[in-house]
Image (tube, rainbow, N blue to C red; front, top):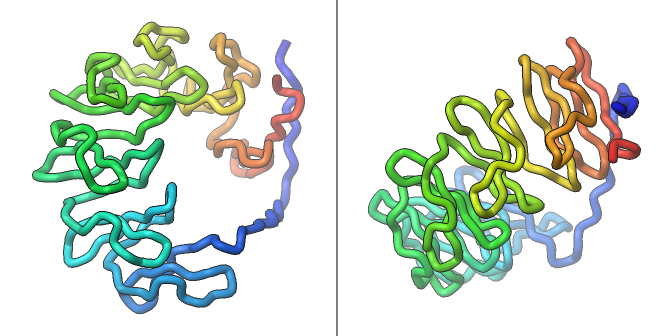
Length: 245
């Protein structure tokens, strides 16, 4: 039996609490640095681009190349890459000579550059693109699931959404289908629920592929603090997770 959908129209105010050592990237003129919660500069603006800190390091672009700095602004990994992602599970995806690989926090290669594109590690595997198709590798760079998909998301709660022959479904970490491809679009599972699109509208499914909420939303955002912004017709409201599981 489908649950009742409760929508709350209007504005939602969020209260954000930051730790004292929280740093936020900020730009002055055309250069990026990081500021503390009181607005003072922790790292003076000096970079062409800068990501937020992740696992103690931030990816920065200097003189056309990417490297990584610590919270003091000192380079932990000197600029040398064409592109760089954040550190996740102790590894960062970086691009060198037009190919992607992964480095550790010293800048040493953990997985040599060899892929056309990659996604970050999640649940000890990473999606990689080779020969125009996506598959998954383990932490040693060996294929856990051979490239065979058109697109893919990250693994979350043991499942990954993947696109095969123009339809999205969900696989487990062996590459077996858990929810057969049938959706126009799909998002990762979060706390047992995932957003999927069918017939031009978004709904919510559980891990069996059953609808918890039938497709009825024009647009939908991921849950945050058990609330998700949804659009019905021309109006936005809030969907409450409570009671959906």
